[in-house]
Length: 148
Image (tube, rainbow, N blue to C red; front, side):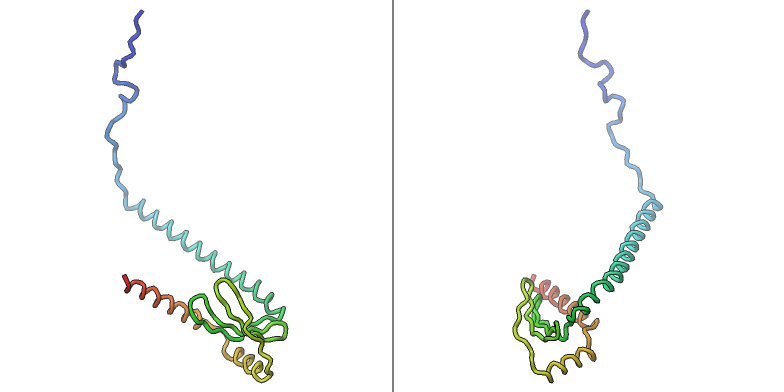
């Protein structure tokens, strides 16, 4: 008995069509995808908002309960600033960089300390600080674009 190794009907793939069928994308499937994407985006925004509200109330009292407070903040350059900080009844002038915080001086003049405290109550660090930082970031990015 002789057994032939050659397939008689074209092999095991003979029943398949060699050209793939492309199915059209319907308007409704695209709309459903975009709607789902929008819902997920809104869900993430709500979670971020709730986390910010929850965490802002938890960590701020911890710093203030130990007597720490930023009285003044002066940004010198990106990731470099000078801060006047009150901690444990003493007032320090700090140099802050991306990698370190250095004590520049301790302020001991009682009149100057009272002035700093009064200014900090009248002019707390506000949304304008964030706005100014974002403006400087935008101008930095524009300068980078203009260099190209």
